[in-house]
Image (cartoon, rainbow, N blue to C red):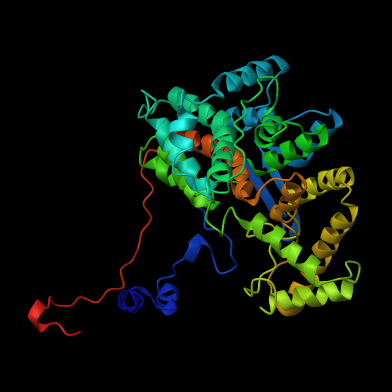
Length: 441
């Protein structure tokens, strides 16, 4: 294998100078990290600079409505919001009470798997990678759909609603199967309760006793809402646009996006944050000693601590400059859950890291914009407090983000009629074919 790897490296690495010569935007980003304009969307908006071009606190809007306003109204009215915001993102407007009730019934009606599906598909060939198990299940569901390749808007919406409704089952049943077969734990396959929301059902399906508090469910509900959608340019949603433009079916499109999300550079950051904070907690005995915490953060940046990669996870974002609005919204709910769980000290520790990490980064790195906590910083803490296994962290992201994928898939179908095909410039130099007996090792 070493010989093969050497050949691949020799013949596949392209000199950086060529990218500069041809003005290639690596990662479809400019030199400042800003994404090149590849499309338009009417689903969400992200604002991080004012009209003068100066950095400002981040704003995220779903269908032109600020997520802070959404969270504030849900909290004031003490309501769950996953289903309502799913409606908003898919259809472009907030539902009336009767429309929401009808939509909830539609999701409830679709929240079931084919007979024997759990036994024949999910309980077979289990894996600790729940995302891979979900992909297999989604492609298997396609075989039960007689209209799998029908590309009408009505059919794609119907397929999308079925997947949105069943993603919690696919994820949690896959984890339960792995936990039973691979870890020799008891098997719990609970059915969803038709009278519960998506967030409540997730906790019901996961826990052996099916029990949860209202605060737990409301915090999970908000975390799902904050992960539903983040523009058309994030890797998994852009994958939705690319794959949809080819004319493929909904199941294949969703699996492609799911495969993107499972990548460590996209959907796995909250796991790294949780592990990093655990590491700091263990290695800094006095959790109130800010100097010691700061020094340890500098060690992480200098590759002397934690995973030796020189990164403080949960800090900074490709788009936001001064603040990530999702982190700001989630933080207020995190405090409430921490108090209920008796984890006040842990919450204060997170707040210290949130404040000190940007200072350490500014000291140890040359940065062109401000650094602040992103949504991954607190979501991992939320999942820890809820007792969720790490194997479900990224699948929970998927349970939320499939809503955005579905909205973008339909937007792509309605507005674009060409397959996405960007240009690639060859840097090869033509050479003659060499007969096999004349080739040198």
